[in-house]
Length: 246
Length: 227
Image 1: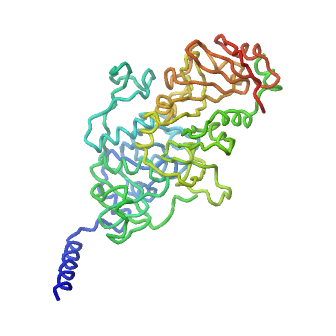
Image 2 (image 1 turned 45 degrees about the horizontal axis):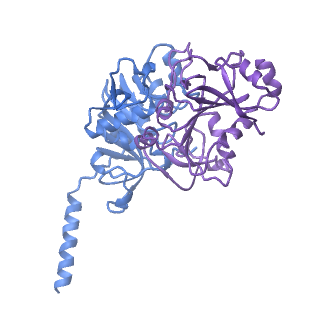
Image 3 (image 1 turned 135 degrees about the vertical axis):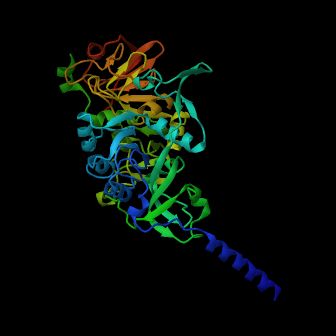
């Protein structure tokens, strides 16, 4: 029957295409971070403890790299996340907006002992520098920080009677991203405010490594709700937990 | 003057938060900074629809969860305390969150302050003797918000004025503060200088002036803050 035959051929096309797809999943956090090298720059998503890929960070600690430049909003909460990396001696420099929260005791001690370098970037400029890095834009003009000590060494440009700073794009060798759901193509959704820097960082690194809570079959994610298209994702690891819950 | 008067007559932190909350108008989108500012949220009159923005990508931030067991690291305020999302609230990523603040979408922001100068210059991110500070989103939010409300004690613990002629603390944003809310007074920053609009109960304009560096113009409609 012609109708059935047509439907059949469509189904075959669908299956063969699906088979040709390379699944981006790896089975361990260790495998996921194995290519991170000494001296690499690494963007790490998260704000406070929300959306921090803590399982991947722990794997980087165990991997034992050194001299990393870490780009992230904070410097870790107590002994978790980036604080673990700092304590393990993996980090040469932090690029962040909020280095010294009450719970940043590990960073504070290292910074006071002059054992780690720091570049403080206003939070919005940090996010936009990363967005530009991912979007192929060299930099942008912002009124943020004009006249402050964080403008030191930066070019000022007057445009239409307002003064702006020239901020340059930021990219990294690696991005560690925390997602809620992932499929085999690497399409991502996020969980509430755990989204924060994650989708922006996912666009701005050569290698993008994802820690996701849940793996779903390709085709199950509502295409309207995918926040990060899988084209940005190099590989992913499924942690299978809501570790982020308090 | 100063601290001695303050102890018997100034507003406490809850009263300061309550006074500031009354400033937030129906239909506004308001960013809340870290610390004191978050205290204002529960005091917004219920008949006003005020939407709160948190820099970490929350539009429609609600109060802390009624049951502490509902606290979730994936839903925190800028100060990293557990919050909720109101019905119709949503999440955005960080670059979009700061596009909102720089792009002029915030009707107001409430920021803590170390010092505010006569011309509205704000200092709130680094202590003068510290090697570095945590700027967070303060610089981006202060430059982009239509109104910047600074909330702070009127004087330091040592009794020094925090409303000053010129900042001695590191600058956060030039000419940004529009109104100052302290335990002693409400002061508007205008093109003609500082205008004393309200005083705390039990204080006189002279008490406030004595604790303030720049000259204050007393508003013809001066009020006592209702507590």
